[in-house]
Structures are given as C-alpha cells and as structure tokens.
Length: 108
Picture 1 (cartoon, rainbow, N blue to C red):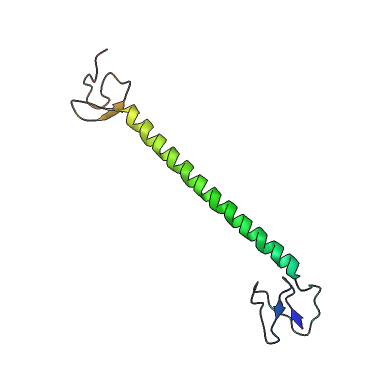
Picture 2 (cartoon, rainbow, N blue to C red):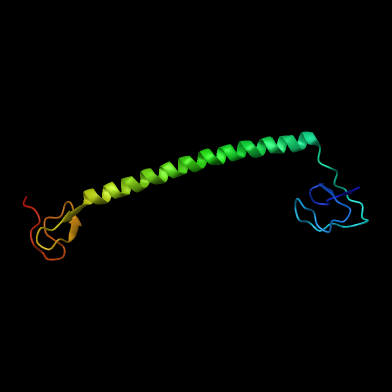
C-alpha cells in the first residue's frame, strides 16, 4: 500500500502525484506518514464546516459595516456641501462666501 508522504492519503499504485495535495509520489520508498484516521477526518470536516459558517457570518457583518460607512460618508458629504446660488460651486456648509466666484452664499 502506498501513502502520500505529505498528507497521508492512500495513493493508487500508478499515481505519480497525490490527488489530494499534489505532492510528488515516491514509489518504493517507505514514508513516515500514516493514513489519516476516520475520526481525525471527521474532526477536520466538522472544523471546516464551522469555519465556513464563521466566514459567512463575518462576510455579512463586514458587508453591512461597509454599507453603513458608505451611507455615513454620503450623508456627511451632503450635509457639508452647499451650492452657491450664483455659480453652483459646492462649498462647505459653514461658508459665507463662494470659494469659486466670491459671491455671498448666505447672510449672517
């Protein structure tokens, strides 16, 4: 019986490479790797499923956070800009005079 020297997967006698991890198979060479037990495979599968769930939750939370930040930035920019009634240039909301044409935007 031949096993992968990297991951311990059982290899077909004709394999030149491990179908699971891609490592070159050494024929007629004893390896220290032992076949992976069913219990260990089950543990890794369960861990993989839990990680996948965690990544899905994280992806949703990150997406929601980006959406919130994007909305906050848009809202902030809309509040901060004031259009000049004379030339239409966008000015900070606290501006008294237009930075482009110099006309008074609002009276104090």
